[in-house]
Length: 340
Image (cartoon, rainbow, N blue to C red):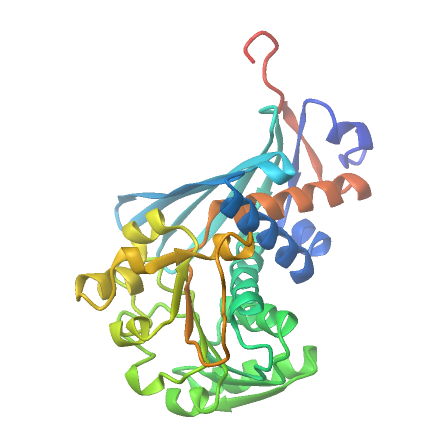
């Protein structure tokens, strides 16, 4: 290790653990990396070489401990993500392991989560939206909504984004900033109906407790993405919207049964059954068919999977190794000899 505390190349390949900050992560990877990582993880899931440790939670004094992880065979990696939510804030941490069990890195993981969540929606649009889809209707204007829009724009031929936020000024700010970054027209809308009018792809990223996308918003040929309902109490679409789908998929069915508010409530109402819910990974892997006609309605309900974090974290680490980025920790990450 250098006198500055920055790691040398050998530190990345031995028993040392490396710490990577949010700044490091942001400098090392972008949405293109996230799209590649999530597509790799989803394809591996469909082929049986990727497995998710579904999210579990524990509550204390209004705070929630959240844990999830994944094992991703295609990149020989495992990872665990841990974070505490409550009080309007959260801090995300990730431990990355090699397939040998050595702990390669500790990372701050907010940016990883933001990128991979958006990337999954982009991958769903790549595989399930019509090839001639050009208009995205977006509900939500927060930092997670940004990567939803970015990933979908990068994965499709979308030329126009129509964004709605409960706070119109936030929608305006989102529209201004997004149009400065990407070669698309971005329009702030006063109502959900206006934002979804003429949309070929509809995406939501909210913490809404009640449906935002309703029966009146059902249109043949549309691809719907509901990405904010990883809480049993949340709901972004009515049962009628899910029931209208010719193809309804999620990321991990077992996790959805626990925390997928949009799906759980539709099932409880009898609008759909769990047998109706397929897996996006099966489509990405080529094990199941995706969209087969322009008239089909397709729906992806996302909870977020630990395998996505794992695959992207491996890219972060490999890029850090190539650039000697990060800080060596004063602890060993390797498994103690004789205990393997």
